[in-house]
Length: 345
Image (cartoon, rainbow, N blue to C red; front, side):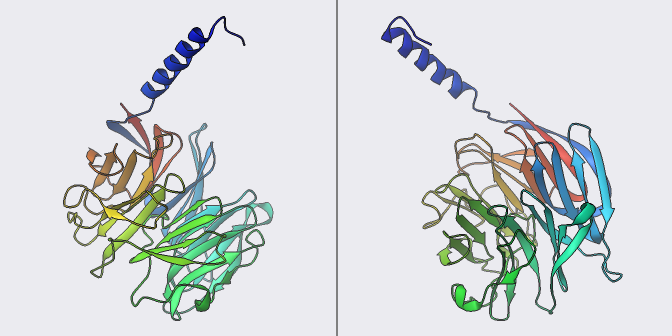
């Protein structure tokens, strides 16, 4: 389309910019409605697409929620009379995956006819897997606590059909007591080929899809047995946020929130000594320009509009994990339920 003169064009552009700035969503309250209730703890949810939410939890329970039809489908997986506890799920363009948290670790993928197929097993007293994610259709990873002298990282390069644990030589030197919290399936963030893993004491970062790794220090350093990073998210390759605390002292708010603006090279504590205390999951608000954050925990839902410098409590409702469908609708899961969250200005 052509316009009669440059002045008119500039006025239109400036007007459009102002209009766009006004439409950046700034939630001030949230409406919570339960969509699924059962005697199950759910710490892992994942959107398979814009219409389908997948989840898995304790007692072998897993399933999907079809958003347009408001329909829940659940199944119970049993392995040799064991109902595994699932706290980590992921998907690629072909299949859905879930891994059980403790000994024995059981990693499943959808097989023929949609039936879950066991593709990896690991046994041992120290086995404990926390989160998983995919770079693309063929390549993905799952992460777990320290075992056999180093952090546990499983890699697949064949679309999840087989998984292999990285050797200790491929990882930064081991820190005594280092692990990860299986609190919300949000210990891993992938942007392009770059990957961040939040452990209890630091970050592990790879820029080549898990082939090489470096360590990044953080002031949320797991100084006590239950203190450390429980969750993190990155808005882009530079801006990231980590949150946690001590679930045994949930009101404690010292050294439990940190921000990076240089891809994790440096982290700085923010909102130190103020709300929120312990939180198990944090996510950047979509289209929020890297400024807006929502966190959840069993102490409630909190919101920040300034990269975590200050926070507002939106709800007393407790959850373990949250994922956004768009900038105003999210789904959260926790003890005995999954809920739809509608954020409002």
